[in-house]
Image (cartoon, rainbow, N blue to C red; front, side, top):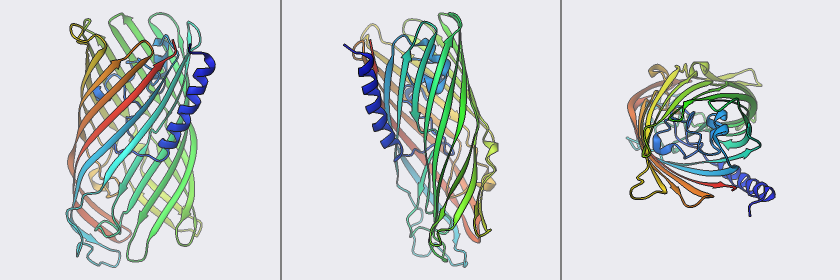
Length: 412
């Protein structure tokens, strides 16, 4: 028999495991904002995230969706991304104007293999109120070049690691309408390295801040469900140290707010269709300026543009053959916030197309699994960068494979 105490014990052990893995992991994504906080919708190319509301992860994607849950439950997810990337240099010079292409591998293929984990728990409190705790990585980046590469004067390693702890609550107003809200505590660690002819440089710092997210879910009929979610902007005042002289620096990081609209339509007993439209306010992030205690500065220009993401997905339940499996399909187009004139070797990003497949497997009343795979094609892009006298110009090509698995347990 599952008791309240056993639920608390399972949750506490799961939180420890996911936090330990999440702090050491990053994922490749548009700019540095991945979607794989849960694997539930990976097979649908993350279509319908604000309306799906099938497990505890809805507390993160749309807290109003918690009202759709009838049992307390937990979900543990793990994603793995493998990038097949190629950076081809046309020009690469150091701050002393020396040619960095001499004796280096060109084109260069960085090694990008990354993990992303998530923990989700939901409690059914009464007929009107449900609550959740979600621990995820909403922002992540890990771009790394070898110390002998032609990009070394501008970039060696660029790493952003985050952890977001988010308690949420939903309130069911009636059978058709529910509202939800949550608090986000975000911890961010950043590490930026480069190695010009003047010597190796590493800037490493951290900071934290609070934000919030709001959600609404409307079900006008038994066949239609719509969700709307707003995630607030988060401003982080971080501080850290520069290697070598151990000089203190301060920086302000302005993370974007997002608005997501989703719709889900139950066609018949076999088919469910879903769609997603998401807007992200990336133009808040104009640059990353490190202000050192010796009154010098280091500026990395972004001048990001606001973006849209469009996704379509479907679930198919082959009831005539296997009644405990749901097959998932999806496709999406995702804009990159990167502006051509400011694209850098640190984040060589481009617009991308998603093509996804997945499977939901009901084992029994308590246990189920989600599996997903996405093939992501990134548009070929060019880089033309001048950073503190170091110059890099070239082309970047990339394909991405994302695999994910998730275990769900209902406390019935």
